[in-house]
Length: 381
Picture 1 (cartoon, helix red, strand yellow):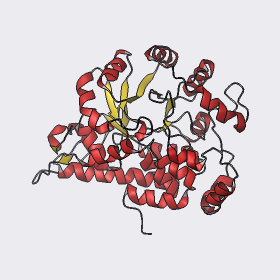
Picture 2 (picture 1 turned 180 degrees about the vertical axis):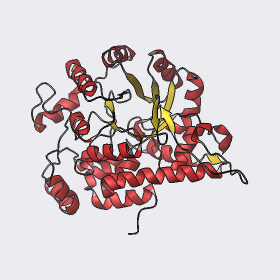
Picture 3 (picture 1 turned 90 degrees about the horizontal axis):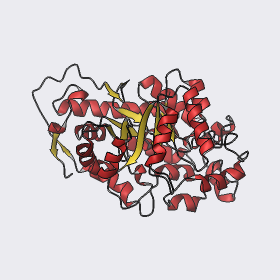
């Protein structure tokens, strides 16, 4: 295969190199996957204005997200089990993001721990928090993120109850994988992946095992996580999290104007318009279709970011044009990681950057901070 030129190329390569259960985990949505598909389709429905005979020199994609300088308005999204796409995956992705000049967000459900990421980075990364019933464990997680120097806490609000993803159930997904004939076959046909995993000790949920009460091994972990996601999570919980954290706070999973206004009332620094990549409420609208309404609802009270559905630099540009101050890529960097490790994450970021840069120029703009709805020819939202 020639060198990957698109995120789709990286996806095809990752499919061949990552065991099916883990590739499917990254690539699946809930139930019919209708919202997962809508996230991509609705970006494609937005058309751009082509402008000609304008000065296209000295272009810049530099921007800020929650006051932090970024080389382009893109962050790596928090994704669970990243270290199952490639050995030590979170550590490799964090290093790639740091070198590129964009934020890396570590998931609570990561394979590599907070401390692992801190050991291989020199600049602050972001940490994403799932709120569990065990409040002492959550407080400890927040304190660990503080000690690691994390620059922002991303509280996920849309996973109080786990959406059903049929592929994961059919595959018998677990971390580490079970040694059933089906799983052994999946791994045996991916020798490069197996070799990498054999060289690392990180095969389970690094932020949880050895830190959560009564969780000392992986057999107890699966039942603990199933019981721990808190369906009672409310806006009041955001208050104590904000007080405990006392730093930059982002609320992820906003898909409704009323919820956006409530999030702004908390005093958080930003919200992420997101439907969890189509992995939670199937039948919910796409993130990009809700972005203009949410931007209008909150005005300048809170910074608005977006994730779910971005597969190109053009998608990033469209989101910025519709009011997003920052965007997040999950699957694109996971495909790169699964395909080529750290080099693949770097390639995914470079693909996004080049597509955004060229598209911005052809729309008659030279600076990402000046991009607005004027570059849109048609938008149904």
